[in-house]
Length: 109
Image (tube, rainbow, N blue to C red):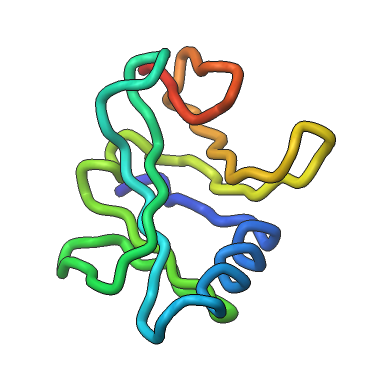
């Protein structure tokens, strides 16, 4: 990928906290699938396996994996974790998205 996917310190801390309560070898998988109100949606799953071609971001106790197809739709994105008046959530700032829904979990390209 020419543009990398970055993960903010806030997201790293949250992923590490989540994984610390899971079984040994757990990781957070972010994937992109068709659906959602804007065409594509982000999925967040706790997994214990990874594929050889997954992008693996491992830092400070956090392990994040993203499959190659999802990487294509997320190229240049920043994964963040936000805790504000609207609640707590992972948010992906995706420069490829031309539109997104209000909840931030679906987008269009």
